[in-house]
Length: 82
Image 1 (cartoon, rainbow, N blue to C red):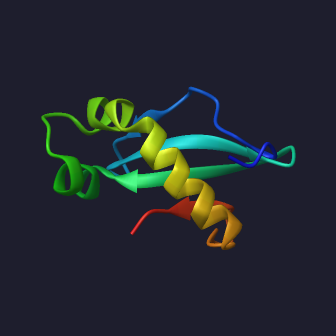
Image 2 (image 1 turned 90 degrees about the vertical axis):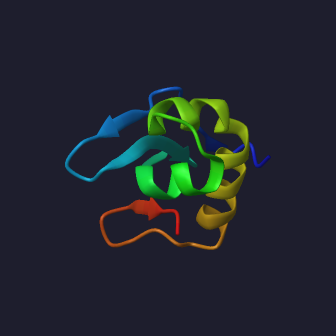
Image 3 (image 1 turned 180 degrees about the horizontal axis):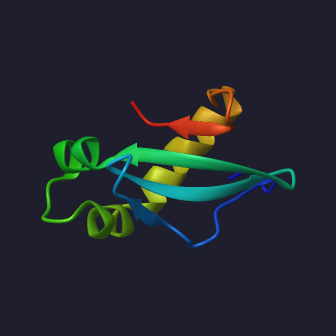
């Protein structure tokens, strides 16, 4: 994993976005990654999106790293899984 990309353990469920959102530091700059609850449950199954995220954190952080390296963030600095 690229040492310039760090994922603090501060994920949270955003009810308005219906997504698990989690911060990432890229070369000291903060971005936010998000994956919809629907996508999480579709991919991995399980009862609650936040619990599913925590169970699959390492795989999701790896995927987020790839999205960040591919410069997939939007105008607000958010990286959304699709």
